Length: 375
Image 1: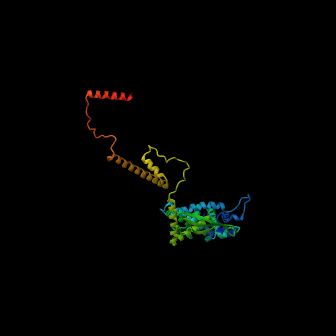
Image 2: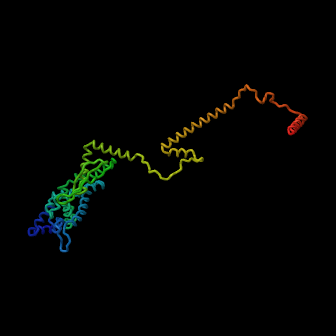
Image 3: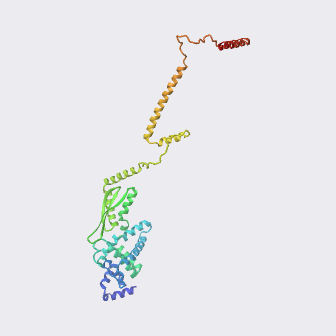
């Protein structure tokens, strides 16, 4: 490998693309063996170049390869650097390093943006052209020198000179994730509302999202992607929550109103089936009668209680009248001034016993008297 590098240096002054060789060496730290890989890595799709077979020539395929290699390399570095850390911490740290915002800045700091060949319509704003080219450059390094060359490039040229891996690991940059975590812990309803979707002067899409907490409209953010705009809005909302206690009070007051409404009883839809439940059978248990009475509406129960009270008062009055009548009947009658038609004073308590002869004589006398009346 050293011999081949030495030969490449000797041939360099006579090469056609010697300026590109020097530029690549300044960025990656070595001279490329196959310059065509790096040419393609710096070629944006906007130029519309095609090969002899009509296939487009740009950095999209190398970007796909470089994305996979970069994830593996950074994961390897993070795994060895933070010994004993859990999987969640390692994943979060790796995502901070390989995210588009970080790669865009690396491309700008290392001079990759100045080498990109494009039509000039897609590199005027933060549309990730530089970050995509950086990933394509990783893919070119992998094809030209292998995995170990990619590892050396990231360790020596990136993490040792441009990025402090320890500061990155403990710096929170995913504001949306942080806001979601806060809302879930406090059971606060969180929504992201799309306010506007427009295009800039170059035709690139621009999104504006707003954070809504418990129905209260909060801060908004604008970006060239939904993720970027929501991140910006989340950052502003978190700052407002930390600095404005009155805003927090209003959010939790709205939450209290919402939970109170959810806890209130909800009446079911009335049944259209007519049930004759107002008839009480003789054999119906007392418990079932009381349960049926409790299920009746309040106004209906009030009317029933009034009717029952009226009936009870009438029954009590009737019983009182009957009792008074019975008492009067039991009292002895006062003697009248006029003589009675039948005088029972001569009747003794013990009747006199008659003999046999007297009974026969009385019977004959009664029969004779009846015969005379008949005649």
